[in-house]
Length: 187
Length: 340
Image 1 (cartoon, one colour):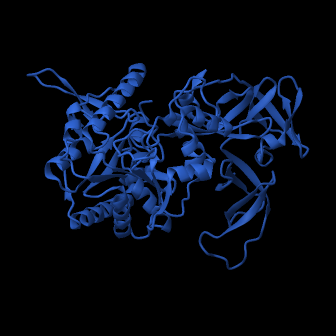
Image 2: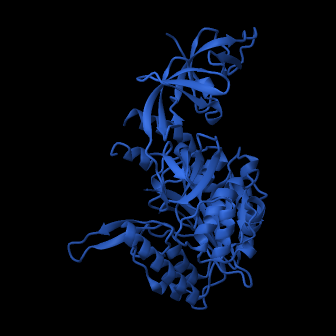
Image 3: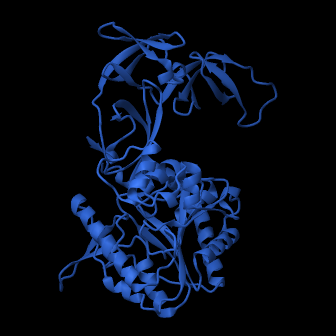
C-alpha cells in the first residue's frame, strides 16, 4: 500500500483487480478543501483510461513490476512483436494498448519494459528520439517567411512539422510527448 | 549567479514590468473608489484556523523573555477584519501570503501575492459587479477575451448537474452522495468520509476540468457543508460564497462575510478540532488561535463582502503564460533544487 500522495507518473497500481499505470499526476488543493491528487491512469491490456481523484491520504495498492529488456522486432498492424534479449523468447503486445508507439519505436532497438503477471504494463520510450527524415516535401521557392514550416515523414512513419530547411536524409530530434520537432542533428 | 538563474531572471523581467503596471492600475482603481489601502504584518502570533491550509512557522527570539512561535500569514484576513470592525470602512491590501505543503507547480507557489478587498455595505452579489468592473478597467493591454468581462455565471449545483449528472439537492446525506460517486465509477475508501470530501472527489474529477473557459466563470453558491466564514443562504444548503475561474484556474474567492459572533466561534472550534486531529498525526504546524476574534462580530461589524484574488495567477492568465514559473523571480523551488 502507498499513499495516493506518493503516486508518480509511471507508478503501477492495482484498481478493482486490474493493473493500471499512472500517466499523469497533478496535485490539487481546492480553495477550501482537503488536498487531492488528480490521476490519469491507463490499463495496458485494454487501453482503458481511468480518471481518479484521490485524497493524498487515501491508500492505493501499488504493484511491484518487473523490468525487462525487450528488443522490438516489428509490428503486424495488430501486435508489436518483441523478444527477450536474454532468452530469445518472443511475445506479442497489442498495439491498441500503446497507441502511436509504432511511430516512436525503431525496429531492432531494445526497450525497457515493465511487466506484471506476464502482462506488459509499460514500454519506456525516451522523451526525445532521433529520427531520419524519410520523406520531405521540397520547400516552395521564394518562401522565406521566418518560421515557415512543412511536413516530413520519419523512417517510422511519423509526420512531423519542421522548419523548411530540413531535407530528406537528415536527422531530427523529436519530442515523443508532443510529437514536436526539437532540433536538427548534424552527424 | 548560475546560468539557469540568470536565464530565468532575463526571461521574467518583462513580466516584472507588467506586474508593476498591473498593481499600479489596481491600486489607483480601488483608491479612486474610496477603498483605503492598509498594510498589515506578515508575521502573526495567531491565525484563523483552516484545516485545509498548512502553515509556516518561525520563532521569535529574545534575550529577555521566552521565545515565541510566530506564523507567516496565509491571508491578511485576521488583521483586516479588525480594521473593518473599528473603522467601518472599505479597505484593501496587496500582501505576500504563505501556504505550506502544496505541490510547487504551474499554479502553486508557497509564497504568493494576494489582493484582498473588503467592501463595506456590499454583499457577494455586489462583489461580482465590483470585480467585473475592476477587471474591465485594470486588465493589462493585450489580455485575451478569456480573461476579460463579462463573466459567465453558474451555481455549483448547476455545474454538478451539468457535468457530473449529480443533483446536490437530492444528495444532501453522506450516504446519498456516496452512492452518486460510486455510480460515477469513483473509487472511495472503505472508511466513511465527510460529505465535503466526497463532494470534492466528484467536483475535481468531473466538474472542475469541464468548466467553460471562454470567459471568466463565477461559480456561485458553494455547498454549506464546506465550512467557511461565508454566510449561509437561509432555507437551502448553500453559502454566499463564489469563486472565479479563468482558464480553469481559481483566481478569486468571495464571501458575504459572516456577522454572527456565535457562528464565527463555532467555526473556530470545529476547524481547530479537525486541524489538531489531522496535524497531530502528520506532525505539521498547529498554529495558535485567538478566540477573541469572534468578539469582533458583536453586532457592530458592518455588512461586508470580501474578495481574495491571487495576483500571480491573474498576471499569468492576463499575459497568456501557462505557468507561474514564467513570472516569478527566484522561485523557491529553483533555489531548493540544489538541496534535494
